[in-house]
Image (cartoon, rainbow, N blue to C red):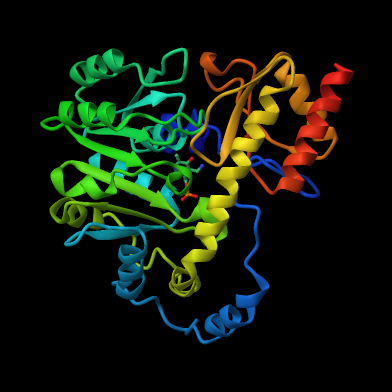
Length: 359
Ligand code: PMP
């Protein structure tokens, strides 16, 4: 046995690293990014703002200004604060570290965002996935049974869910939240909230064990790497102890502080993307042998015969989407495409139609 394999934990040795495909020269529709760049009208002012950032200093450790703007812009309930992460990925990782007692488990409906399972396993916790129903909704009896059987420290509910785009009813979420009340924490991951009909954020004050997690990644700021979560102050104070000091760098903090004063730009873009999403779904549904699932996020899941081959043929046409067919049996023959500009959506649809004619 090599030194490395004796020192590194077996669960790490067994993992593969998170794969990000090469998107050079591609129409990039694989990662739920917002396609719109920052408008020219604010670029100069934005540049000047960043030019004044003190790069020689560590960030202000409280991030008070940034947090206040997040609380104001994203409807954090009065008396509640946020905790910041280097993307919500880091928040998930911090929650795992905070809760990873020996024997602690994490439950989530699957298929869902893969980092819940990866992060739990990296922290030494068992991840228990509860399959969604055939229509990609929550299987409530299986979820309630899993909560009773496994008594998880953490229950993740991504709403809308990735990669399915499913929207879970508030009544179901509340039932799961109630079932978890003496058992563990519930994380409502609202990464796609800007494209969704509602939010759990306003109801946060009703619960001591619920966390609402969000990110600025999907509204047009994926490159900043900034996630935030809110919860009862006593709970947030404990998780905060896990946060590495200065985890949000000065450029990210300064950029977000500036951009949060221009939120109408991102709100308008999210609105345009919702309109485009419905047009894309309609168009996909009109193509023979393609099934487009409903979505409340900025992406659409489609089911199509020979999806593997179609994915490769789209790649050859420089269209990069995400092949999720092997993620879970419920996703057999499924592909996920990010909603983009009308022009890029057209390129995708035309390439898909051409590919289907070839098949
Ligand atoms: N939650 C969900 C449900 C996601 O789909 C993603 C990104 N794919 C994230 C969190 C991570 O977002 P971030 O860019 O903030 O790390």
